[in-house]
Length: 620
Ligand code: ADP
Ligand code: MG
Image (cartoon, rainbow, N blue to C red; front, top):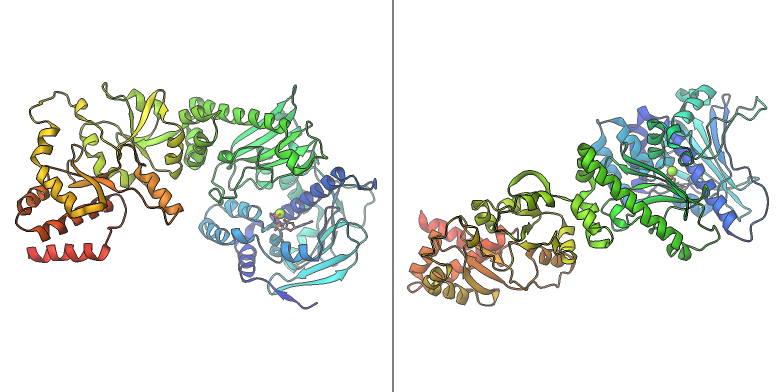
């Protein structure tokens, strides 16, 4: 068979993996062992769950054979194996969706802590390529379960790969590395023991060393599932290793939750919250990465009902004896046992976070900074825990430097204030500069800044906290006169509105269908105008999100509020009767300004620029 070139991106990634991770070479062995372990997990599950399987006894082991004469090391397993297509797809290409992110992250991690780049390898499904850090060439010989043909894949890691028919007695895979001359150390037992102890001790299958000399079985690892041990027998390092070995993510675990439950339902769970965001946290298909085991037999890691999506930053293991191996995926999705476990796990996680909030605020804050935006999705999605999550949630606000809890907000409320005021925007700057905020700022009434897209969604299902309603300051009419210390009622809003009636009606006529109404505002101090959503309408930010999701979505026209104390209004009142053309133009500019202040483009950008230029030049 002719040699196939690598896909463009594969070649690029390969080059980076091989060259930029140079000082972390040892981990090639961790990656290959973990692939073998995954493959054995899959085979064992197939055999246990399919009725047709033979009773042939298999020793589930991983073997490392070395030859110092040939300068080779071979990692062999009795796993599921790969056929020709698998070899091309799994080893000839890289998890495509992640390639670009991988390159970007690697670029970012350069020069930083090496352990970051090290973790990247396993996370992006490029672990196998680590073999090329120490090898001149790599050969993979594999026979897939259920097939009687074997194939070999070989490559120098630079130009491409070659696939040939091959032979092999048993089902499984052997990865043979032809080591670089400088890497002869990897044929030495001491070196391999050191690496296996460090990275792969907890791999639940025995890792056996073969050098062609000794006759006794030489097992290098502890070979027990870490989650089955009792907490007191596990060191922090061992937890950390397990975390990174099982594709946990960058860095170390921030929170480790190891629980055993016996009784009605028995299970063991070892779950982690990582200290850093996984790269795909906001991908649509990202889900929590929990490996499901039944009595230490791996079942699947793609089930999405073990933990909900709002906990998708978590990973780890769930092992239970309450599941039957012979069940279909369908049945797993609906398994009452799993449902109960899932409920219990959610509760444990929430309780741990509550505990941290009270007892270890630094840790809680770290968690919140990394995952708060995802965690909050639970307010929208989880009826059982929405209140718990709301209580743990933190927000920026106009009166506070740091993020505050809703309980803090309520505590600081004005004595006449009944509602919780918020503004939903893209970012803090936009909130701070919003004309809507001006009067609230001057009256020192605190306003929450909701800057995550999910905020507008959960608000649609949760309209209050502790009985206090959430009220958007960009929507409807909020009467702020209540908050004035002493009311000098001489000039009411009605009086002002009456005084400016001609002006507001004139602007409304100029703007036509672009607005539903033009009103006098009592919320504006510096700005000339702002747009307000009608009482019954959709919140401005929600409308913006709907527009992004659906190009055809037309928002509702809104109410333009103008500042009667602004000099522009004075000017416009003056020309209302005398210069209709300029009045029309200024009305349009006014509306465009209100849009700009919300982070939107003017309706007619070229008109806006032309007009502004005209105004500037007319003054010089
Ligand atoms: P990952 O393990 O994260 O998927 P790797 O680059 O380590 O990424 O491996 C790529 C793929 O190659 C694996 O997902 C698996 O399908 C296949 N593979 C690698 N090693 C083996 C093996 N020993 N037995 C069976 N399949 C393997
Ligand atoms: Mg792997």
